[in-house]
Picture 1 (cartoon, rainbow, N blue to C red):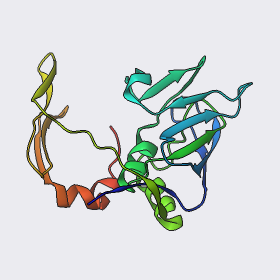
Picture 2 (picture 1 turned 180 degrees about the horizontal axis):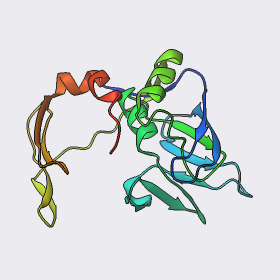
Picture 3 (picture 1 turned 180 degrees about the vertical axis):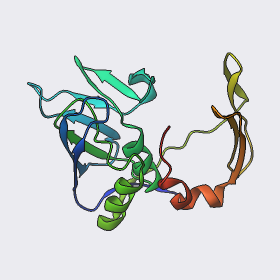
Length: 189
């Protein structure tokens, strides 16, 4: 079965304050053609530079995810990009009036709700998938992340120790993750 790329049926608007900058910002997420990908466009800078939301454009991950390119940067993109992924949106142009996505309530939930309200539309091009062919592990001190190939399933298991020395272990299957409603309201800390 061929899975097709998707975009929004119509644009959605978000207004709020950047958590790090304290500045008011407006974000408009617009439908985009197949193959466009997720791209941010700064409307407050001359020539309106565009930055793709790809790992290769990530320039900082301290306290937020920041992407940079074309002499511009945009921070705190993680909740909006997670919402687009949760709604299976492959193609969107995100026009933003500042250097930071508004924090909203600190979660992906407000983004998911508005995107869900307008709905998505299947496009004519097939969706591209990342296929894991070998185990990859990345470490930083005592922290690590690992991804392994597995046929036709997806699961996430993670543990972390917080400042109170509590250890939390979570395991979710593809079905639980596909719904995303159990994660949408989670706030960063």
